[in-house]
Length: 330
Image 1: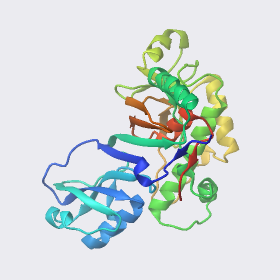
Image 2: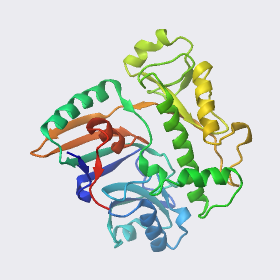
Image 3: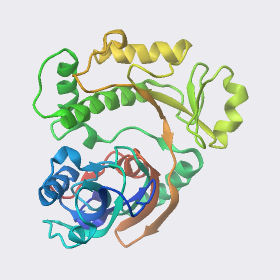
Image 4: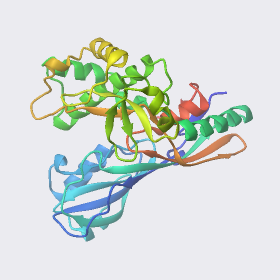
């Protein structure tokens, strides 16, 4: 039996957990939107038209799935909060609006809370998912990027590679940033796949991240650091390639360089389009669901959990239910 996700948009609910609340003062208005079968970009353009500003002036912390019921925050300049609350938007509605001094930037969110229904799940698959969820809570799951990052036809990576070669691709600066992030994601996923050790286990030469502070350090003694990894205080990381990023050492570094070369990325000759900076960074190789709950139904499971910003619910579901997961509608 093939498990099915998103049989209806209501089967995939996601709520953005903001990094901070609007202050109530300033030239921007933070607008909390619930959207259904709309992309984040489409809603941003609608808000821009309503405010009479350019779409690039509308900020948001991250993209949310189109095939879902999702809530997220946008920032809009010169839009009065009372007017925002009265807006009639196609496939979306305004839940809250308040002023704030600054534009909302990509990545400025704490986490995402999911409430998902996966259908056509038999008893055996449900029992296996319960066991795997317990393992994910204890040790985490592979923090790879989901397929939606790479576009419907999977060609976002190819477009980004052309861009780095100096060729032109359609779309503006925001589109260029997204394409380059797809190439960064592809490199990260390939590094994760090439690793023989599971993502909860450190290797000598790893760059590890401290989960409490986000600080990075080079692992010189993997045995000494192992208890901290077991306690989920630290995790190994993979590259989000760029010009400024702490690099690993030894075999870990060799493996990452090989993957970069396979993707046509030369860090010494990294020339993104004008106006775009690829500073780079590191991403934890594993993520852990918080406040997770699995509930059995007659032929489905309901999963509620919170994931850190940038981690994918679809990846966790694939880990819990296997590779036979299918999308329920277009």
